[in-house]
Picture 1 (cartoon, one colour):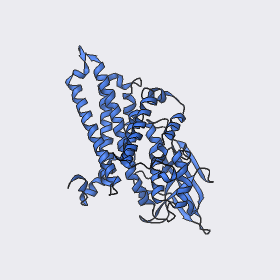
Picture 2: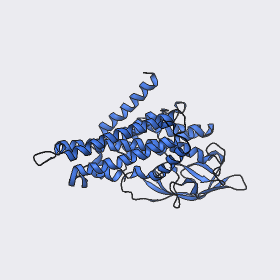
Picture 3: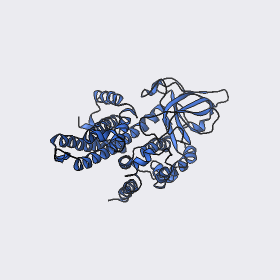
Picture 4: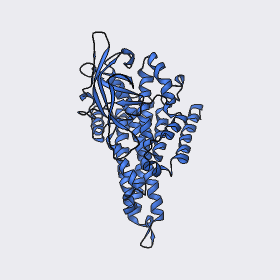
Length: 385
């Protein structure tokens, strides 16, 4: 085992211990609390996870994508809200590390590594979800050379609690007509709107962001050159979809564990329900599909880490893991019976959280379109075609 591999294993094991010590057995109380879990944000910072994608030169861990996927899986096994605090920040860090100017890296990455500066990503708009090319937020250059940003974004995870946000906006026309800007809170014209009342993840703020003639300079334009934003964002989205797949696997694992424990304890017709063939069939399918989803996510992470084009395999991982998660969560409720429908048992929470992984980072319907187009274009190497 080389030193880097050993370090990665230690990091994953540290996350696993944190989940066992501070999360498992406490999620029901956390869910019931109306208090924002600042102490857990602090724990994630102490573990160095806000710096997972930040290069060591800027104070981060610089982990590879397969290791990050394993971290996200372990966190989700405890509570998927934790992943919501990290995923967009990781994507923002990776974009800045890869595409940012030297000045932008020095300005932002050290604070992002410690968690002092947490960053959200603003893509979705009222008139466009998974179709990024339909966005209407626009930045135009004024006579003084400064940019003026106008528009709004919705459903922005950590939109209120983050200290900065990366915004995808139009700066021209066509595929080269998009750019990314990094905005810190407090700029005139930049405001946080209403918070969405979501089915799950009630401790994660999902908000509107509004931009009313926000004045920006090229110092806030990622990479310093307009027109590169769509490609920069699509690169990060591949990583985000892998992370979302890993999170779905973690939730599926947790639901499977809960179902097994309940099936081994609950009795009906004179025996534990795990001895009934119908329950055994559900458990077998849940276990096999969860393992298959984990394997596919790790394969996608390996492809991304090698630097190859990963949109198809990342889409496959996110699609399959999201669907498996939804199925496993539903079957967990079935195995619990009426107990699965009340919040005293975690099965109810799994069922509320699972749809998130079908919808976010590009809906699963969009993933199918991406996968099919790549297959038709001859991109079948990842599956041996």
